[in-house]
Amino acid sequence: MNHIGETMSVYDKLKEKNITLAAPATPAAAYVMYVQTGNLVFVSGHIAKNADGSVNTGILGRDKTTEQGQDAARSVAIDLIGTLQEACGGDLLRVKRIVKVMSLVASTPDYNEQHLVTNGCSELIGEIFGDAGKHARSAFGVASLPRGTCVEIELIAEIA
Image (cartoon, rainbow, N blue to C red):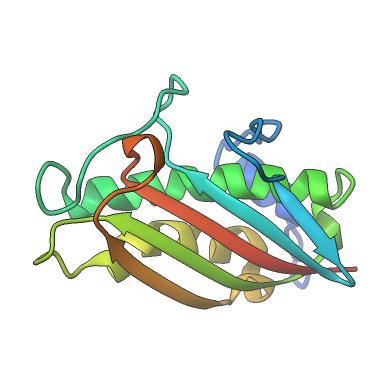
């Protein structure tokens, strides 16, 4: 337990939530998982996966609920943090700020809760990184995503 005035580290928060970070996936096309320029790290889009590693497929508003989309977005956040850890040379304590999150949600034309789906990612990032996790964000509805996934999210972070 922390004493008054102490703050939990990113790693303490991950442990408290029983989150284990995996090594980044191998890119599925002609790109790299992240690029650093100056103090900014641009993390490529990560797609939603199920616990067994298979692609979490579906269309919000047709065969996925908003709550299922939020869970998918949360799983993407965990993968994004794992890739960010590699970009930081294995040390998430180097993260100064999550600057921006962009989310693509496969959804029907009349579905309008993409922002709520994306909260699954944004809320976890906020819980893990605290004030440094407060970020700008965009959430878009799209007709389809690679491999039939329901959600794809990318992020930009500032590191020390």
